[in-house]
Image (cartoon, rainbow, N blue to C red; front, side, top):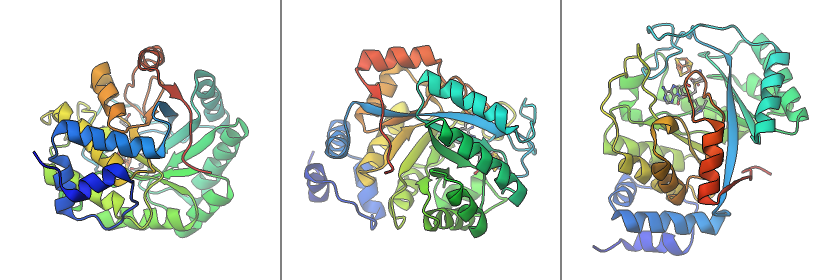
Length: 331
Ligand code: SAM
Ligand code: DTB
Ligand code: SF4
């Protein structure tokens, strides 16, 4: 089967494009698997140490009782997931968790809060957390929901390195997933974060019952942002009992690997993170994701509220693959 000239060209030189067309992205998804992985791995090697994986740990600093209706999320107050809500954590407790994460080998500490959007007084406490985590010598990331311009500036001045805010899915499928805020709301927050000079962490979730076209559109949307997100988390839906998305037909693992590969090709200089869902993935599937260009993971035995692989299991996998933690996407 022949490969289109545009794709061959990408295999020989990474191009930072922001004008991807849907048919081009679809044709990447449809490439023979070996050609797709080869192209993605070629792009990866042009831009990164192929055996280095960036390692971030997550902490939920404010858990549950969220006003939003994101259909995948156990933290929404509207669903009946078995989850105990917790108020915003004291700074000291957050710093203890960050120290433990650092001792286990994480280089970035990501703090997540179950808010639609934070209040200004919440931001002050988050800034204290950011400063404390930075003083441990770790990179910082927070995900707090929608932000105002002023809040992005306060976070930037506080020294925040990354802000995570996902597009989650395609604009077309979005209303099947969330009704309490719009796709444009998300794009607006991303623009404010970018304008404030904070690195952007933005990706999505697959396995929510979306179509092939939705996955292609999500990646196209990310790649066509004015600047590629420095970090692109690709989450496999973690199905949580009590959420509307529990029971969704599982995504073909090969399609997941293809999604990673296409993200790598479209955003050659971004860290593509193999994110939620790893407890359900075999070691072999994770190895294929790394081969397809994933070079970041969430590490530590918990994501925000759900399980992540045991750290000993990840050490073992890294050793067997000869990959090592390291690297950062910001200067
Ligand atoms: N409340 C903030 C927000 O929504 O922006 C920040 C925290 S929210 C939990 C961060 C991200 O986690 C979501 O945008 C979504 O992409 C991801 N996420 C949440 N639940 C998930 C699940 N069950 N499976 C996979 N990813 C999930
Ligand atoms: C991202 O894209 N995935 C992380 C992080 N950013 C905040 C969150 C995954 C959450 C999975 C479900 C949970 O543990 O609650
Ligand atoms: Fe709330 Fe964020 Fe969960 Fe949506 S994804 S319900 S905004 S915590």
